[in-house]
Image 1 (tube, rainbow, N blue to C red):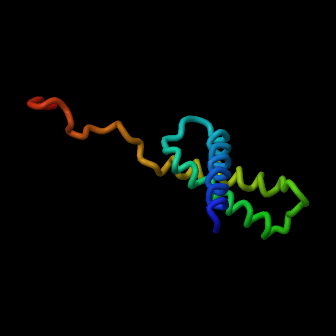
Image 2 (image 1 turned 135 degrees about the vertical axis):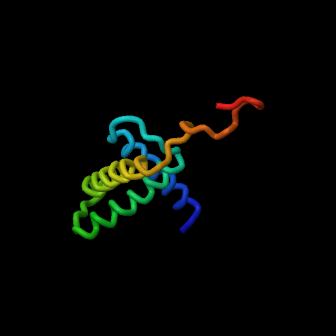
Image 3 (image 1 turned 180 degrees about the horizontal axis):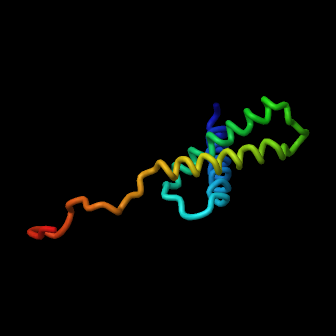
Length: 100
């Protein structure tokens, strides 16, 4: 894979991941880098599913894009449910000499 292909995968993955996050209601507690990874995986999975079902058109492929976004939304739901919700626990980093 060339450098241009890698950059294209990252940019397209970020777009697909962001669209997946927009579809899922509520706040997702996951970092942006994880959204990009979810988007990249969803883009590959959506393309594979469209080719597996032989749903190809010339030029813009509506079905492929639809599969990619739906898979990204499902993956965002799963990953955000499994990702730890940071900042809610006591880490013991309070003021010196105080006890709770």
